[in-house]
Length: 492
Ligand SMILES: Cc1cc2nc3c(=O)[nH]c(=O)nc-3n(C[C@H](O)[C@H](O)[C@H](O)COP(=O)(O)OP(=O)(O)OC[C@H]3O[C@@H](n4cnc5c(N)ncnc54)[C@H](O)[C@@H]3O)c2cc1C
Image (cartoon, rainbow, N blue to C red; front, side):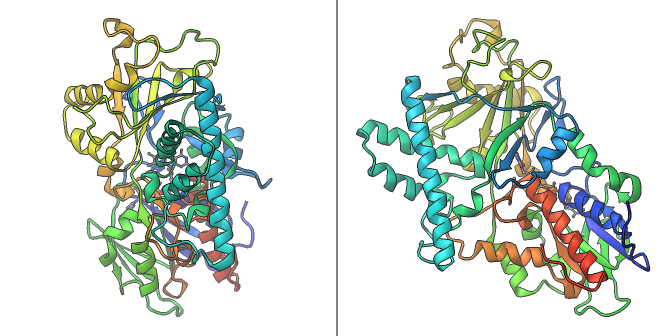
């Protein structure tokens, strides 16, 4: 429903049709603006994207919905419920293999995992307290979450073997933020706290949610697909009738009253010269300071879920982690830990005999660089050899049994995707001085130039890097533009 329609229909250009751009369009359209979305790909959704390569549909981008404990409505959870998207609550069980490939007894795995989460909770608290006290200055910028875990592990009543295991287990943080735990800035750990409430996993895929988010834009905005923006020419000062001029790779020019850039952080970092005049110093510094992580996913589907003894009971551990493997020297000499989620635990019809590996940091870069551009069979052979040392340790595995031979393997290659900025999402790595200020600068945009930013890298604190963050950032940028035309700058 349109309310407060702007007198003369201002025309807003949104670059990018990911969640942030689509949500931004929705709010602007509902306030009577005319909207054109310019999208480089041949589809909507950006990092929300599905593949049918395994013979059924999976999300190659997000799957998790991390809700809040604040009591506020989580917009993506709400959309999941409204669209009947099935959500999975993982069981609490986990299977942990030590560095020689022997599984830990259940009670030891449970005890160490609870302790680890307590310590991570303390890291968030200590980071948040330092932020309140002195903007985090009392935590050296080179100090990492790993330093904190190691320190606290040393203070626990544990024997040396358990202490070592606890420290190795902390590497699972990498799969949350996309880079190793020793790269996680402790000073800005509070910005990763996401999000305190229930954690759910989309059992089917995000397409119904995306469909709902994109509906207003599909119905009322002009959408130009396969159209890459290569330059953004803005006025230096806001004055009447001046426009922002966008040039596409085909040399076409589009003029708008305001422009919202939703191109990912990695894209902005690689194309500082696309802006004319160059961005204000503080904006370009913020873009440079923030870092991008490298999360990738590998789905391995088997003829049946050989690791499950009972397909009707959710008793097999949701999560399996192979810590610092010393037994795969030929394929993984760096001893990158490996972890999977058991997709056979889902309810019918979404249950699949599939293991979902999450990779991060150098392991992601190694795998993607090894398979990119290769034929399907070659990729399959490489990936099967790489992951064999791990899945072959699961209960029920017999090398000669056909049920234990991977049927299909799908590995994401976000690293090679220029339109997601060749990375997964932003994170806050050791060395960063003022991450919160950098995010605020992006959220403020350059109103004097009629130029705005949104996306997961300009999201509310604690929601950066998520779908909800991207959605809320789009909403916020749109409200700021509405504020300009309604005469007041609206705060988030
Ligand atoms: C592997 C992976 C797993 C993830 N897992 C989760 C998860 O479980 N839960 C969660 O909440 N989040 C997760 N995320 C993060 C989440 O996907 C993103 O935060 C969110 O989708 C980002 O939306 P966005 O609108 O900011 O960016 P995007 O979706 O990237 O949208 C930007 C759009 O801009 C377009 N574009 C880029 N350059 C140009 C150009 N020059 N001209 C025109 N168009 C351009 C792109 O094609 C794209 O469509 C994951 C991400 C990845 C990669």
